[in-house]
Length: 251
Image (cartoon, rainbow, N blue to C red; front, top):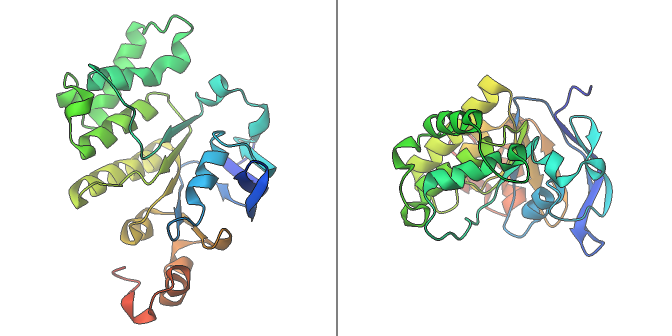
């Protein structure tokens, strides 16, 4: 059994078989948070979609708990990896609890009927993610911050070992950013959840991350410990900003 929850080896991602970013090599242990940072359009979302099997990998290998991603079926993968992307599902007349319950479907079989154990798990996670109080509300009529927490609850209902998130704090005010990311960090620390996410908020990424992958111009720019990435020189080069505009202690 690999010590890593997630690895890539000489991974190349892109579209229609055409390479976009090459030689991506990462290794993440259970309980660690890895954050992708970089300018818009650098290729962060392409990486996340590729390692979650939403895009075909161009070349290389992705290992999930030591197993080749290519040999894992979608239904089996759903029990190990869950995803939270920035686009919310369109719903009609579904409550927040209805949305969260869909996270149990990898375990319910073809009929999709939740057992008493499934319902207990859903209730527990909704309380952990602080959406229990809005469980009966229409999902389409809640705030962006509440919606993200509901979607996080749905992702956690899959009981994943690995959580992949693409800009989970988009459109959220600072309060909801702190609440959401603080919860994710807590789950990683206390439950050994491996988290891979992209963020634009450098101050959040600096505080939360164990590992940082910096992407620029469709290439890996830097990879490593946050203290080595969040320097005035590196951030200045990554984003093309005047070095005087960035202070490592305050982002």
